[in-house]
Length: 410
Image 1 (cartoon, helix red, strand yellow):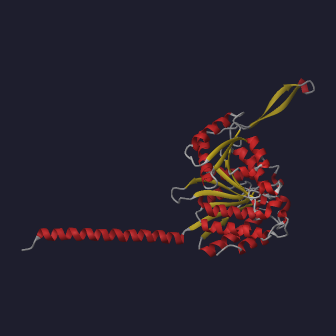
Image 2 (tube, one colour):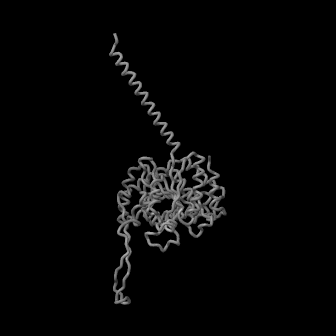
Image 3 (cartoon, helix red, strand yellow):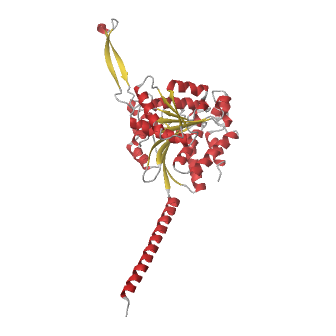
């Protein structure tokens, strides 16, 4: 007789085995898909040379990115567009909607510089800087990271004594969406005063109003970025405010203190902004990471940049939220030196700030080994005396960039 129950048990047993085998095959397929994705992944980069020396330095960065991609198997899809005064000249606006849409589709944007005297008399909303501000706003960029590092080869180029800047390596983290630059109301209005010398005994004058506003959410968000940056460095955070005068400074200090409790391994100190400005000159190396409101960060980061020997040496990154889909934190990366219209077109601009901006981009895109190799190449090139005119050397923009490329480890 046929044992029906035994047959059913056997079918059930082999069914479980088959189900398990199919599950394993599916896992293997999934794993292979991710391997293939890693090989085929394309990093989309928008490059906007901008104004002044921006196109010159970005042209060299593009070459280095292409070379790095070929040598290290990183697939870059690089597109170029206009932002700033050049965009106004071409399209009547410092940033077109089409360019904005392309930036939103990219993984990162590299920007040269915007602005120059040519566009000083444009209406406020048409000025080149409005293009940059719109990029930051529409891309949701809220954190600006600007490192100030004095390379050993350049200690004599700093405005301070070598013993004050040797080994200098600080990071300024600046909030980008709040504060005096964006607070409302923002207006200029007329008012009348009694003045015997005026027409009819009266005189019409102007009153300009800017409003300094910041919220708990904005402070919390930038504070986390600051503490995370300090955690990866020397674990010290100096929070900059004016709590002895400004209400927003009191809120800033309270919120940063609260967030700091989540980072017990990071030492927090609070510093008034005027004292911080003085200490950056007297003893800059006492700082590690400085956490700043928008305007304070704007001023102190330029002061810190001067300590490194040249504004052309320093990069910056403006970061948004991390994408849940890709895991990438979108960033806009740009050198800190500005458009330098006085030397534009001469081929002598220092490209190091732009190259180091690309280093920051690679780091935040997760290409850490490539970033480390390029950073090391910059250090070697400078140590071996490859310098542009602003650093006391004679190399052109292209020659210094080539010297860096030649020293990138394969």
